[in-house]
Length: 336
Image (tube, rainbow, N blue to C red; front, side):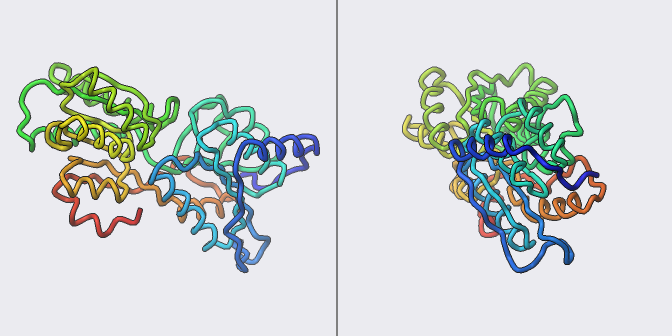
């Protein structure tokens, strides 16, 4: 496996660095006296993060920074502020800086081939974290570490079956869906997996009556849910693609004089601490966990890739599912 980089033209370097300075916020961290490479040269990792749109993302960033520091790597970190062009600029900057490995969590699924071909030409291996991409050439990245979002959608569907049964619900299930960022892998795949369960087992009794993006933010969830309730006041289930949107939606549900978790049953994805607090209060009925603490696994993978070892193309994270009655016991153990 390729693990070193060749000379990149000065013109590309200047343009890339200038683009990053204009578009994204970058900082360095993770340095220590340890070399992080068994006595050899210290590994430099360039990491391009999506942004800081949710509690999940904040926990993910902290995990990456802490694990890089513990591993003794030099970390060059950028926050793309949920803009693909910022991530592309950051990746080009890392290429110009001749980092050892590049890792990033893609804002959206498509549009990465050109910049990843530049990384491949520079002989810098690329690792995808948290989110996958669609590419015409699978050799443009060496591995993807993260959750199976389609399976999370399926788990959410099966969880709703349990929640409906526990609530003694009879009759039509009218679902509002708060989608993640348009074009992002978790939004597309969580919707896909949930629909698989609907189509297979609930064609006659479940219906998604309204669905719109809330951009994975609490403010977005609040705003979109308020509009949902005005256009579809008989909604009785909310499926939110992340906890932050569900938490925002709860504010609008309560403002409309309805009880979250009772009048409108809520299934969410992520498992952040605030989500568990709401679930312990009876406002969320079930949460499908998506583990953000990828830092330690990522640093192990970076070391192997840098050393030229063969690595798995797909590495999944360990996760669980939680119902309302489990929330109080699980809350003290939540690390994010």
